[in-house]
Image 1 (cartoon, rainbow over the protein chains, first blue to last red):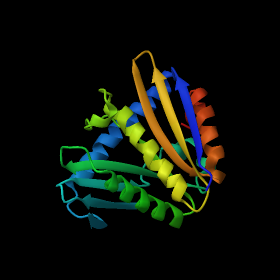
Image 2 (cartoon, rainbow over the protein chains, first blue to last red; image 1 turned 120 degrees about the vertical axis):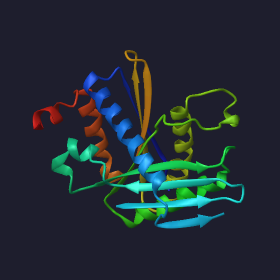
Image 3 (cartoon, one colour; image 1 turned 90 degrees about the vertical axis):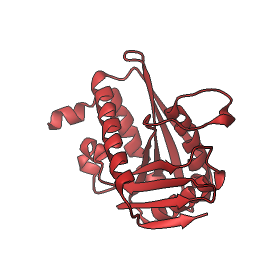
Amino acid sequence: MEKTKNRIIIENPPKKVLDFVMKVQKEKEEARKHLLEKKEHTFSIQI
Amino acid sequence: MNLSFDINTQEGDKVVVSLSSSYPYLKDIFPAQSQEFELVEVSIIREKGNGPIKVEVFGRIADILVSIAEDNPTTILFYFCDIVEGIPHPRMGRDIPSHEYRNYLFKLLFQRYCEKASEHWSDIEVILRSQEPLLEMYAHFLVRDRHLPLVELLRKEVLNNFETISSQK
């Protein structure tokens, strides 16, 4: 299969965009906490 | 989609991976296209272990992502390289921020993904660089070819200061 590599670089995005990204980062931190609190997952693998 | 799995190694590492479509980022921006795709955010968290994670673990993660994404034709995988915690990276030969290292790892992971998938996929690496405040952020969208126009729309939207969002709210 052909491999495609693409990159989008955005220099100095507007403040609104940065605020949005910071919000995403904060949500991720919360999601991370919840995920670590989960005792059981859909499946588990041992290697 | 909302599932999680863990990978445990004999070396005592435990890595938790989640796939969740409860994050509405793109659908907020593209409500008109929201029936066409499901944005699934991938999170990878190391729960146990201190040393470098063996390559086999990343290989298994890639295999599972391939399998799940190929079974779900509307899926766009999204990974945001967060800065929550550091990652041991002795092979890099220099100190780099954890989000930059995550970006490096995911490029490798998605390369493998693209190579293995039966359908044509592209790994879109998005880098945001800001001087004020000084920061750099990385994200990846793993998309089928037919979803590439959405990524281009996103790029335009970012450059256009999210005007679509502003006009909707």
